[in-house]
Length: 92
Image (cartoon, rainbow, N blue to C red; front, side):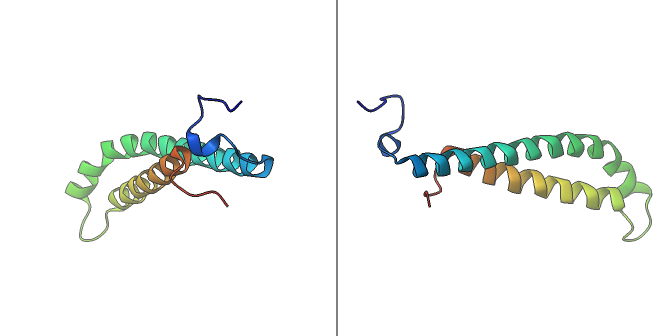
């Protein structure tokens, strides 16, 4: 009998499909962990962004640029990891 705790589309998978599902979920969790680590970095960079924008001359705002890069990594990795963990990406 199929495990009723699993979603209906995952109850009758072959062993290869189960392995692909586990691999996809592992990568999703890895991306979510990366997003969490960069969220901590964004929080720390946020402390310097205001000072950088106020006192750095012209276009020289390295902390602001680092903050934008870290924030984009958080958004991309967090979204991709959540999509992969949720299962909205079809199996191989």
